[in-house]
Structures are given as C-alpha cells and as structure tokens.
Length: 262
Image (cartoon, rainbow, N blue to C red):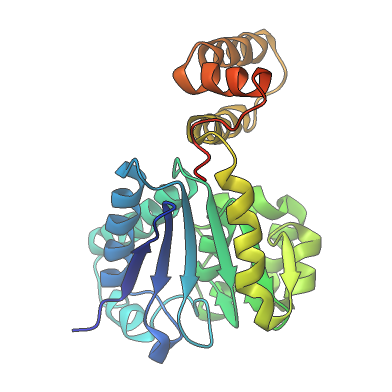
C-alpha cells in the first residue's frame, strides 16, 4: 500500500515531508491526517532534525478535503464529527507549534485545509501558478479549525473576505496579504527552498525554537509589565544556555559556532 506521507532526512538534518496522494491532488482524509500528525511529532522529537520542508507530489499541494471522506462525515453523528474535527485541529496545531523551522512549498491548488497547512508554516514559497481558495462555504461548511492560523497569517479583514466569498486567488495576491512570503517561477521552487535552508542552518537550533515559542507567547498580548518581564527572563535564560554561550564565544573568537557543520 502506498504511503500517503513520505519522509526523507538528509545528512544535514533537513527533513522533507511529502504529501503523496497525487491522484486526488493530495486531498485530506482521516487516514492522511493521522499519518501526517504522527510523522510531524516524530520529526519534532528527533534532535538531529534542524529544518522541516512540507511539500507535495503531483500537480497540486492539497485540494482540501477528500470527497469520499466528506461523504462519510455527512453520515456521522455529532460526536463522530467532533472526534474527526479534533484530529484535523490537532494536525494544524502540531504543524504550527513545531519547534523546528518549517518551509512550505506550494504548487498548483491549495484549497481549504491546504490553505490551513500553508498558514501554519514559518516560511512559504509558492510557484507563480499556485492558486488558493477557502472554499468551504460553497459546500455549506465553514473554514473553522484552520481559521485561527489563516487569520493570524493574513489578518482579520482579508480572512473575512476570503472565507465569505470563497474566491480563487493567485500566488501574488497570497503574497500581498501575507499568506506567502516568496513567489517564484515553477522551476525555481527547490532553489528558493535551498536558499532558506542554508540560511536556517546557520542559526542556533535552540534559539530558533526559542524564537517560535516567543512569537506564540506574544500573540495577542499588549506590551504590559508581564510581557516586559517575560522577554527579559527569556533572553537571560538563553544567554546562560549552552548554545547561547557557544554562539557568543564563537562570535568573539571569529569562528563558526558548533551548529554549523563544514
């Protein structure tokens, strides 16, 4: 049986997680969701992994919900639907909160949950011909469990527009509203990914994990005394850490820190 999620980890610690249902444009079903959650958690726990790339085989990144899966859920009870929805919510949370930096590579269609995965990646590169759509309302549904991440990525005004209209929008509009960081020619996707990989591999793994945790901590908070104290504690803690001391020592000694492998 074909594995719906492929994993490859190179000698640098760069993990590539590839959605592998090209015959259905990498549409989600319950099995793929559980598989992807498990693979992400394994990579997060693997200390040798430095960067995670999320990609997809075939013409599309992800067309959203699989038709067969959606047909099954129509016959589910409320409790069965709730359990199913919680799995999808867990997938988005797991990707979003991964301690490693993540790079999303988007080609073709990214619809529904595919937009959710896109919004959960730290860095997103899209092909010029990528297309995006929050299409749920056309099916009488709402973009619910993905909405916190989409809203965080593109802001409330854009989220309200695109979740209400279900308009198709292109990669350049996705970049304008903040869903995508870089738009490249279709044949330049891998080169641009490598550019970011090389940049990320220069950085302290612990510091990058700390940055992600800090960003989540600051979300929605004003600059009150609690935030001022929290940020002071965080920098003091990392200065006293092994990687913090190594990074400062390497800078002063004009050498590469230990996490940069020659």
